[in-house]
Length: 151
Length: 340
Image (tube, rainbow over all chains, first blue to last red; front, side, top):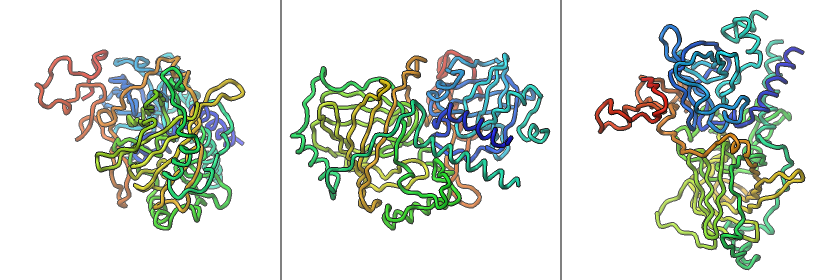
């Protein structure tokens, strides 16, 4: 039953974000879509450009993470909508992302969460994050695996 | 038990994607009926010329009378893509790129050589997309790609742009095909004529392409006859409808007729969206590679790695003929946000 509810929730999310979220000009083979990780850091760049928006974020240990999302017309259509001024260098945000398979510091964006706790969904098919993250963040989980293991 | 749950989840997601592929975002509306050609034509040229003669050369529009399809549009529903070429043996849904445990190629649709080529592609998986190299989608894939289009009609030409890949189609109205280049093109060479508010388009000289990622390839003999019109639904919503017949004697056993629809994006217009140049080669860091088993796949460059391009920043590879650190060379002067 719990699984069914999750499937329906994911389905509802995908129906609202639409098929455009699944599309891109390239495949998503390099991203591990089975994993979802949580990170906090400082934005170095928010690049709002086609074919993919990109977020560059530096974590406290000085690692620069390169995170890719959907195309501008897709992320503008989301709720809340995003544009090239939604995030700015120096801003502290958290992200949920699907990491690169090979362990380098990068991946596909799932959510961007600002200091007010607002969840933005800039993802495309590279990462389909769980809708449970709003709850998981409140409980302090840092990965989907960790959250699911605790439940 | 866990395996069963995984299968259920997989099936649910496949069903969802399958539904979405047929009905892309936007107001839900039933697809219009496919209108088959009035008779069987051996070639697209025969089909187009029959329509042209049947309508006595069509309508000659002025700037005032030519149908106006301005604004932003996105692809909506269609009955094309892998729906034409794949079937599920057990009724389970087919994924957007043709995935599925019991999904097989329909017999008798593709020629034997292209059916074998499609099977070869499917056996390799869907971790490859030729558009990774930033080439335009071209025809017929232009019809299915997501994001945003503009349809600008004039009495002598129509210019239809797709922001994905800066992929512009030009339709020359009441003109003959021309090819002075001795090659084919991604979008091909298109001519057309109006019949009142309906535009009939003939396209030839197209690169070998595909219908979408994970579909069969088309050959360099692929040609189309399209019938475009704008219609108003019962709720007052406009949509563009394209009833298109695919001809390809190398890949298709018989010509296929399908329908594509497009919906107006007033939502994006209200948000201030304007179509920009698709700077794929200058700001995208995905590239084609091969995995450990030799299969074509995709990888992602990070800052500091060879070939990395810096979106919006001061790309040191962009102007190697200028002094390093020259002021004012960042692509975005708004933020000082160099990441290299």
